[in-house]
Amino acid sequence: MDDPTPYQRLARRLDSLPNGFPPAEDGSELRLLAYLFTPGEAALAAELSPKMETPAAIAARLGGDAGSLRGQLKEMARKGLIAAGRGEGGMGYGLMPFVVGIYEMQNSRIDAELAQRFEDYFQAGFRKALAVQPPFHRVVPVQESVEAELAVAPYESALGILSRASAWAVNDCICRKQTALIGRPCPHPVEVCLVMSATPGAFHDRAGTRELTLDEARNVLRQAADAGLVHSVANTQEGQWYICNCCTCSCGILRGMAEGGMASVIARSGFVCRVDATSCDGCGLCAERCPFGAITVEGAARVEEIRCAGCGVCAVACPNHALALSRRPEAEIDKPVRDEREWLGARADWREKNPLP
Image 1 (cartoon, rainbow, N blue to C red):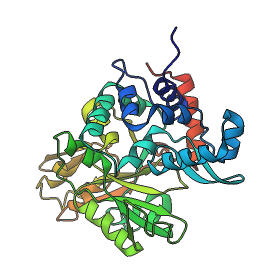
Image 2 (image 1 turned 180 degrees about the horizontal axis):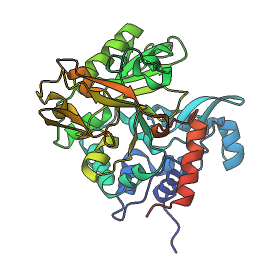
Image 3 (image 1 turned 120 degrees about the vertical axis):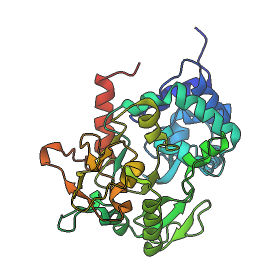
Image 4 (image 1 turned 180 degrees about the vertical axis):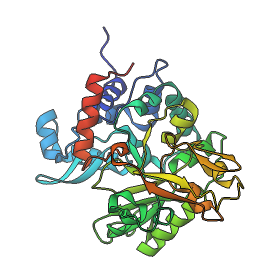
């Protein structure tokens, strides 16, 4: 058997991570990687650990000169192909998953060719990764859509998550840029992807992002809610660093539900929409806005609770304030794991027991 190419080795390495990078029968995952990585970059990335390592430690493990390796790693990090950050012994570098990771870091590089190569892989292979549990993302509502008397934990609320951070910025949505580049433009706003940090000033002068104050970040969130977008975050209680504002026409996660009928691609919130029939005039706006197809109108709006993700998009839009989110019974709430480490462990366990086809 021929030796695997650098792209084959990297693809297998990425798929060994809990996030997954499933192979496609048509080889589209390899063509995607070949557009992003040079052969040398792919060969090096395939040897990296997800744990941050200094160039000296990587050179000692792989061989080669630490100085020249440092330059190559720094350039790969600049291109969003690997992670960079503080590790044991100083500045380190590590392997990133493809999603959430490498792909989202291509906001400044994406062009029509990359957009098409991603689309080819999304259709042929990546959607298999959306079936893995626990899901990548979890729905969180805005506070205004939740019944006033309910206690809401910070990790359950988009505004609560924003308030726990110390720095904020907004990026363009790479999903909407991608669908526009392949001729399927989305009507929703583009500059709505919020990022956060516990470090004050973390986004000052960072390329590709627009630094925000907390009030400005809240305004972006409200604009996204008004546009009918679903707020989704990493499926954990702690360590939140982004809020995606998603739609079924562009979002790589929600498209798996809309196009592939995969109901479990996103974890629902701990809330469900309830209708005050005495206030509802049957206008149907809520049914039009619901991205999960959970609402029908027969005189008054009716919610199919099993389909409701608890996003609150309908409640924000209701002109009569006839809809609000109530807490689900405890037995129906899937409480997210504590942090990314637990999420990765749970996902790895699921994949071990449920191999992807």
